Image (cartoon, rainbow, N blue to C red; front, side, top):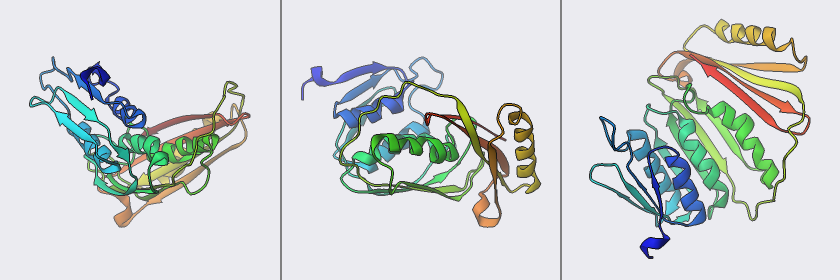
Length: 259
């Protein structure tokens, strides 16, 4: 493979998207100047963990990281799927890693079953609740509407985490084309208010406060409460709210916040 076949990028932004698209398109990619001017140059621990995860999800992928960590080259292999087990660093939430698997899993050689442990929701990355109620729901537009599962077995709030999720995705034979241009009008809102290692009343207060605002715009609102105790509640106290609004055409709009 010649050097002209390698796509070249610079900077740490969109690193995950570039690596995932490299695997999907089977095009090698080289990313330089990763935080080259930063006081702490190079890749962060969560980015290195992402490379490990992509290596587990594929067969034959080759990652070359420079000595300083400011450059990485990926020569992608085949997406294999299968069972993946990983402890995610608490510097980023599990959603950061799941986004990559959600894009790769349908195109593997076998069904993917991934168990990831870490933080299930923070205010930096998409939460596992939003991935389950919105992102995975969009699979149906592409012809994959059965067998997909994202189960939250343990909640993990920052900073210590301790959460665990199980993601299952079968292989898709072909992807349906999609033309989606009409956003429609919002017809209903659903949501989840969760609480871990705090009073269960905290989740109820979240529901009451959210409904007090949203009822001014639409009557069809239902927000579930999800309270975790004991070993399933992770290592740190926390609470949060994840909302999904569905339009008349099936478009989904999400919002979330945690503390």
